[in-house]
Image (cartoon, rainbow, N blue to C red):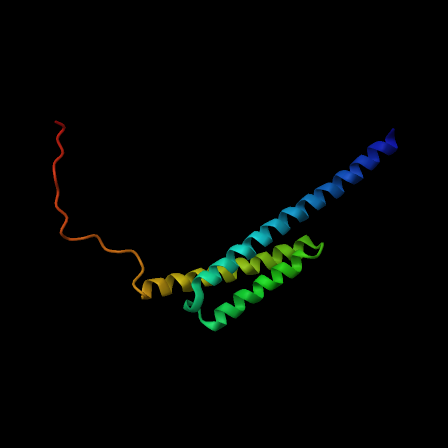
Length: 117
């Protein structure tokens, strides 16, 4: 009976490790996909240095996700998050420079009254 309890505890620890690894991998792949999509949508608006840096981080995350080291995957994911922040800042700056930022409200707004008939 005690042997079964010990085996259950061993499997529980292994199950927790595998669950954590699966979560870390899923988070990393999700961020890699989202960031890759953002790079594609930004197109030529990104400078080549930023594009290369972000694409390199995406490759690092995907390579780390192939392994069994959750800490390495987390570290690569964190690096990609920082690169994605730079990417988003640059994309937002370009959007603002191209005039596609938020538009000002019209000055010719006419107030009206509403009455029910």
